[in-house]
Image (cartoon, rainbow, N blue to C red):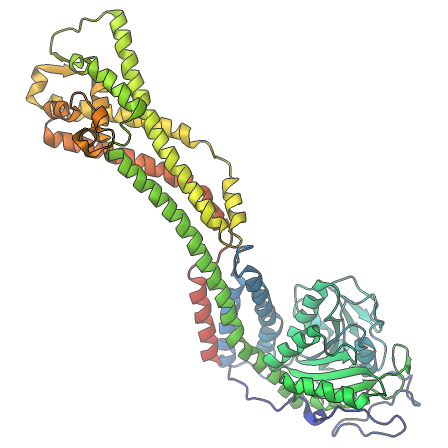
Length: 630
């Protein structure tokens, strides 16, 4: 789409350094140039039905879409997809701000920008917004020329906005075209109160084709949902008529909305209502100075005096004629309406230069938090694996019960007894065999217990480290609780026992398949593979290091050298091969268990909804493509 040229200020002839005061009720005022005369409320035509916003009777001229339009629409669709697919992790840094920005930009793309790219001939939407009790509904009824919305400070339609349009335009404002997610009801003439959160469509011949007036919820309502509702409609409007009162114009909420209009260069008119006769000049000057100070000096300004001249929920005098004439000027011809809508459209597109990067910053904040949380898991379990690796080879485990059980087996002569000449039968009594079996079984259990204690201790330490680091991150405590509450805790010890038992069996099989049977000693000696496997395990756990003086308990590690015995049976090369395979087998099993134990933390992170690493890059690219397409 070719970028539209900047339009003149939408204030038209109504903009000035002073507020419009409205015509004198006793004097006739001509209509805006080129527009038909408006019926005079309160005069002979006061009760006559007819359009009082004198605009051209036809919609904007339709222009056939061009290839540039198609490309621009594709770029906008791509940006919308990127934003729509964004997710934010609840409670983490950037979540609340990111979701609000995401919904804001997404709604404006869907409800305002894309519809106007696809159809240049849509009706001009004028949103009348503002403070509670400012008289928005009375003004809307007065501009239309008949009652289309109910009035009152606490009217029942506070959160049921009313849209008045010509019957020829009502289909455009159906669910298929205008804010599709919003439920609505169609009514002819007077729009009766709808359900909370429902748009009421009031089709009336009093509205000319091509223009719609929207009575929005109060921007300073006590109900927060009303603010969001009002913002949704303002985001979809071409022109804002913002109404506030002489008693509330300085409220912070009023200026929040006005500053949004300023930042997006939205076509804007401001109306100060309920202006008392006494002190009127000073009040208008002060409000005007506030507009200037907030960068809104070019907005069209109007004042409505305090009056009780209201009948049928609209003004009976001509106090709103100056606003009607302003709207007749800015929306009178198709070309002028196009200029008004183009200014707002360009302002919205320009605002994406700052709004989307701000959204990206919130995405990056969540990604960085996700990296930090993930790094805590990686560091903790990498540390656990390193501690286990070290302890498996430096003799740390050869103490306490395991060392005692080994010394019992070594001192009993079981190692020598397990070796015998081929053909010679072992002569053992039943008592001796039972005793031997008990000692070997006790050593096997001690090996399992030592390995189990090592791995469980390392895993518990890793889990505690992760929990501590996660709880230090804003919002991380909930993730930690979610991870720790997942089922499956307490099964590590059982799984470990099973893995270690299988590992001990595989070590015995390796000694049988690759050991002494391939050496010449096999012609003379046979041995008990289970006992030799235990000797192999004791050697793998660092017996030689422990007994060489490098360990704190070296003096306790006495007895025959497992390595000397194993070298005699298998040879140095075969021993290295078997030992390397056995050590790697144990390490693989332990790392597999650690990987399983970290799963709750990984799942908690994956389920949190943290944006993906490449989402920020894709958003930047989509924004860059939009800038090029403009």
